Length: 363
Ligand code: SAM
Ligand code: SF4
Image (cartoon, rainbow, N blue to C red; front, top):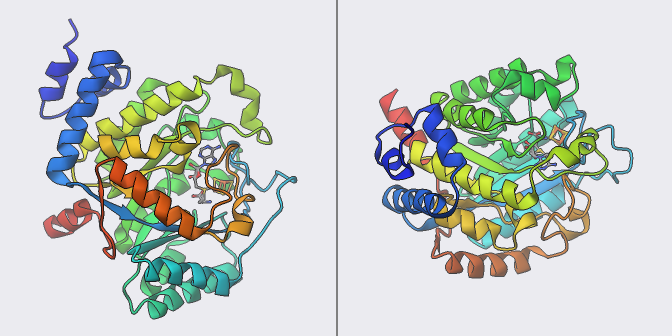
């Protein structure tokens, strides 16, 4: 006989079957799950929410992930690459407005010019902020040497989503070639961790062919890998990508949204002291999506500070929110939203993953 959700939530650890049961919960059971994860979040993390000012500085990408609107094969995208001075201006905005941290994200490139340029930008951001801004980067798969150079230049957190811990599923949502190998992704995550980055990963929720068991395994993978930070969001189809063909097989957007919240809640129960980001894609489905995620377990939010004129071209999926707001509008809107979710913004703080500190202490 299967246990009640209450019994499962009282256990010290969760099995894969328990996790699947929690991910499938609805009604009162779902409420009990969210109550438990909120309580854990308040006990371990508190009400603080930390900002990461997000600069999506280029949509030029050499890869062809089958789900992504800015994949190299999509010839309908206007490609852009924001000038260094504009990126630095955005970082200065984050510094002047006490954001504490920035995230630099783009399509994947690994040519020498790109690697040198990022190294230089990282150093410049450190200089313009008197070493005070924390820097996360999310620039895809690179050699260990490149990761090390960027770490030495000042980046200390890296986000590289595993997309799926199931190799077979990973292969279904990527082209079959060396440029898109699951083994490389795993090696990259390991390299990042070995170098000393706060290492972040994540998955999309509701991709074609994905099962509850896959998602439970993804959460167990994050725990097993001892990951420091996670960003997970609903998959949102884009009509200029190959996976669009499977749109009829997807669960409804609302179900993807609810499942994402449940994934965040279960992850908070499994990994009490990590940083969990409230993904922008949540807001594309529900205007209050990110606030709901903060209430039930997330503690990081990434206001978009990309110069407004380029935002509309970084369309990973359709209906992306906030593509026509300036960075100032974004800050004011965020503050109101976080207050609404009963959170307190940790202005001027890095808001590092406590898990990272604990992991380093114990190693
Ligand atoms: N190019 C880098 C990389 O792939 O790691 C960083 C940028 S990439 C656009 C960031 C994340 O966007 C990916 O890891 C993927 O999970 C997410 N993404 C891409 N297409 C998406 C879609 N259609 N719906 C939701 N998320 C998507
Ligand atoms: Fe490029 Fe990242 Fe999109 Fe893949 S997910 S196509 S690497 S931007």
